[in-house]
Amino acid sequence: MIFDSLLGMFSVDMGIDLGTCNTLVCVKGEGVVLNEPSVVAVKKGTNRVLDSGNAVGLVAKDMLGKTPGSISAIRPLKDGVIADFDITEAMLGYFIRKVHGRRNFFKPRVVIAIPSGITAVEKRAVYNSAERAGARRVYLVEEPMAAGIGAGLPIAEATASMVVDIGGGTTEVAIMSLADIAVCESVRVAGDEMDESIINHMRRTYNLMIGLQTAERIKLEIGSIYDDGNESTCEVRGRDLISGLPRQSMVTASEIREALREPVGQIIECVTRTLERAEPELSADLVENGIHLAGGGALLRGLDQVLAEATGLGVTLVDDPMSCVARGTSVYLEHLAIWKDTMESDDDDR
Image (tube, rainbow, N blue to C red; front, side):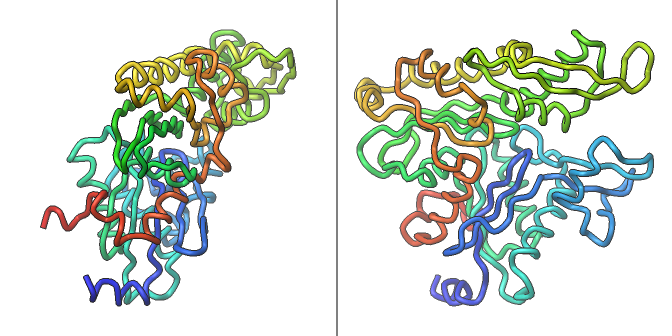
């Protein structure tokens, strides 16, 4: 442990929020230093990354839906877990090298946030990918815990703190107390399913096929789930399913609100199931402490109001919800000696 601490003086230890849509990297004392899409461009039929390993992140996202037959733009994580081991390793290696710079001799310690519901096999895939990508030691922390710490909640105290973390692939709902999770539910419905709902709506209603990036733009521009009387519109371009030709159409906020009702409803059901399983004393604390929303999906307009009406509790959107989990991993790094016993480590299997 002493030798490991000495190595830590020369390495750039980092916390990673390995997300389905975006990967964020924090460095101790510096905050978030990298925020890029979890996308890799490879030569079709191989796992070889294009352009000597540089077609990762922002560069690769610009290729989504626009690649020729010889190239594939791949998101190697699905529903918060690794779907393609080799490509995830290449992506992690690129991000670690980008943050770590030229200090390659001293490999970094890495804290990675993972969904609370993943299996032992899926955890092993994270360990192996991070180690082969250049990590010296890997610690895993559950996303709700990282989000709670990143939001500044008193999760180590004898009081209930509740977090709803809506990412790209999963929604994590947890009630925490005394530095551990008391009740937790995980549902694989989040930002990606909202985008798919918009795609399905455009196909059914307008016979217009659109891509994921267009659906995400619609969600960001006019997406909401609470009827506040705003009837803004958005111009949508895609391919006509009947003629096969390019076409544009206009869609209204009320249409998108209706399209998003099903995935948001599943998230609300997950929240209520978690509340129903809580011990009475924890429930009593939540009357005062309320629910805290984190993750990129929490930015959907009106979600806090709908959730408050469904639960009867106060709902607070945390500061900078997209980076909340990553900031939490940074806090774990800064106080590794205190928190390491609450995390899983690759040392546990040795």
